Image 1: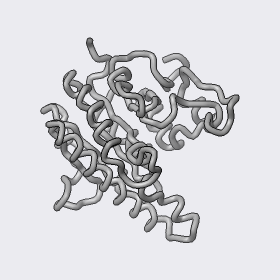
Image 2: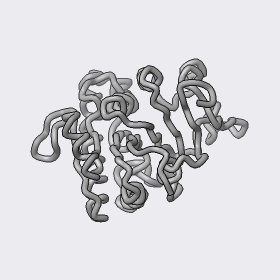
Image 3: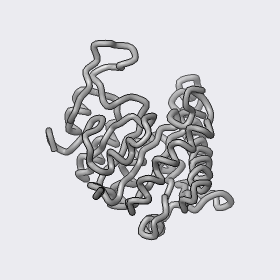
Length: 241
């Protein structure tokens, strides 16, 4: 089996690490995701990961309750570091060489993000987990994924979700919600589909980086996406790209 993509960014939401608990980190779920990642690494695919922190803290939610927005966002960035370290531990328990790089300097627990060092790690077959978002408040981890994908010249962003793809409405609330097989970034913006924020979509569109939105809870889906199998929703620069 020949991978369609040789270098990819996996955007992993914090909620995915919480599993059925809905909050915190479920070690069993982290291990299951790590096993999927190992399958891809064994195919000599270079994989970097951007992890969210919504299972621990959401900056927007804190801001809505009266917190200073910048402070709330920095707290959210620190939450992503907790998730990154948990995922690193799960991967290394499977003998997958992993490095965590953070956009906020914290040398005691992780490397500081340096583009060339990240790319060198990837070339050596290591998984690189990017934590702390972009290092700036007011930017989501979706934007961090788009930014890092452009910086490391990734061929695709794999958007790991808890649903099968992108829908016209929330499929958990609206039984009439329609799943999209393909979209372009203009449609994502115009339809306000909420699969990623406007800044992330614009970055992907400008840099011609496609995204695949799929369900992370089904084992083997990361591998299927890397192989180019039809899965989830494909978002490209133009319709049907």
